[in-house]
Length: 146
Image (cartoon, rainbow, N blue to C red):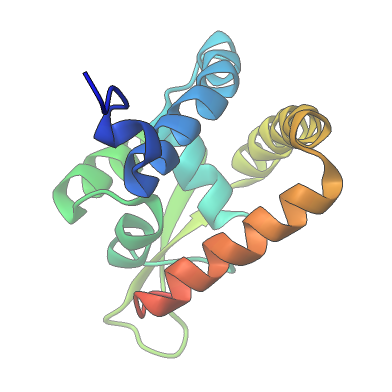
């Protein structure tokens, strides 16, 4: 067989998805050990420093549909980690915000995420990581979502 290489072994989209899956698996296990699922982690991380976001905005940032995000937010409200507040500028708009407990929880998770990221940077190398981050930002901006 003259060409034994599989197409996907050099296919950029496959490699991005595979690398994300491999790199995320270890940290996602840490999230689960702390009693959370990945959806909860993503919402809490998205809210950190945001000043509040609507369910629709959270859905877009967390890459899920709005009905799924509504269910995740409801679970987090019941756990006391987030709350819904009317927007002061537009009372029809409802923002999701971290509670004090949510802030403490996400700060712990972010510390663990940063430690995990440092291990990835060590494996890839600082210069290569900067190049990769810049390239990924360009891909996102090109899509119009950046």
